[in-house]
Image (tube, rainbow, N blue to C red; front, top):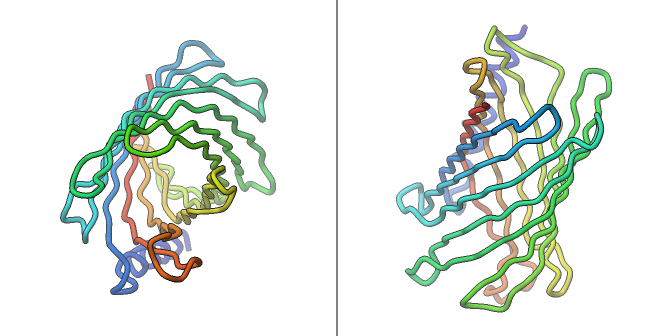
Length: 220
């Protein structure tokens, strides 16, 4: 039964990645180093690279450093800074992004829930600065397969910009988390990314991208 469930999830992933000729297929890779300072505090180092235009063009990278502290069994909080380079008008443009974050955790009937809130100040050299709020809600399903502890998860992340205060991006995830070694874990996922397109004549138009993503986390 467990093997059937895992196979079914992979079929969903592969079917979604190639769904829709009008969707750009992208590949994202994220690498994280988690350094424990003590039992309740840690430093996170992250880098991410993205390929777009049917995974043929490198268009995005970021580098992130953050500090997180456990305030209780159900809550942690922290702060950080992200340096972003993104291709716009055939040139890489820079964004500086200090942020605050907090995450709530709880369990119910074996399901593991997390709700991460993040407030970002986005500093640009090529456009007006702005504030943005994002919330990522994740559910880990109460099944683990094989000694690699393969576990399915679902997540949805919303982005709200304060300039006009509106939802302008949504990311829907479905994937598998797994353990590689004692100190190394990974994820593979499908992501449907929807962004509000302000350049189209219809103000409610959204542009979608189908993303195949991978995460690796090394813990010290």
